[in-house]
Image: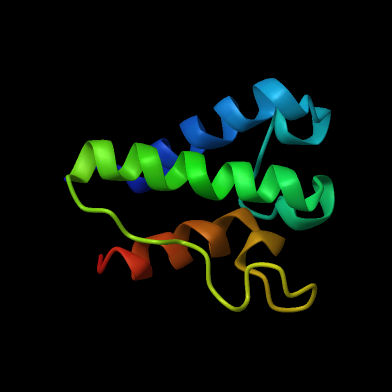
Length: 92
């Protein structure tokens, strides 16, 4: 079983190689990814997360949903909510 949070942190690290957002260098449970980056970086994070999770689990699960880009309800507004969202989508 993959450690989803570790995989998401790796996806974030890879995305941030291009974005170079200092706020993402030390993400905590309450870090707000939604406000830290632009929408293209969010798309990159989604794609990177999906690819890494599929490689680890052998199961592709789309992470984009109707709330991802919702300024009030996005699971990306807190890191812990993002992890919980992905775990839920993966059925964990």
